[in-house]
Length: 217
Image 1 (cartoon, rainbow, N blue to C red):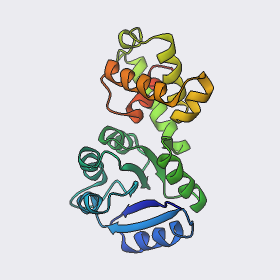
Image 2: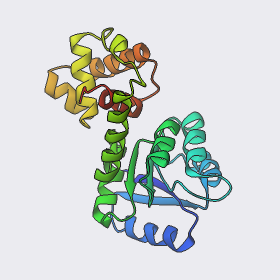
Image 3: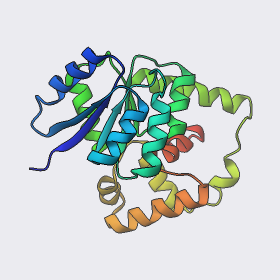
């Protein structure tokens, strides 16, 4: 059985070790390395090629945003799941702009952290409830302030592309979207790639954020 390879990045040693012990209770997960900051996580990602980096956001010298951005650039197959204590808008925005595939809080139960890792591994973006509320309130405020204009971009999308975008925003993975819309996995991948190109977005996380911002979820 192929295990999900994980690197844990946190500046507190006892938390790194505790998380490792918790995660490895699940037979589907293998913690391949521990990192003290974002740069160490990046250096280790190049060596171990993990499936997931579990990343704290606020760490000395090189924070989580640095680590996520560097990993996304050099290790495109590695996904980044933020695990932190901070759910303020500034930190959340920083993580998303860096390319995070999910954002959950350390206060979550152990089994939910494990479930979050598995979801991100399977292509589903995961955001904790309080994190999602902060994101949503920020985007609603942006709407009120007219600080973004998505209407022109949305009009470029076909009806089928809009259907796919809505399901991405709801957390569906490619197989689930294919089943829902009676399409092949390859067709769904092609549609998402075309949508990302049209909207000038980098990945599914940015697409999901765009959908929420524009009321497509």
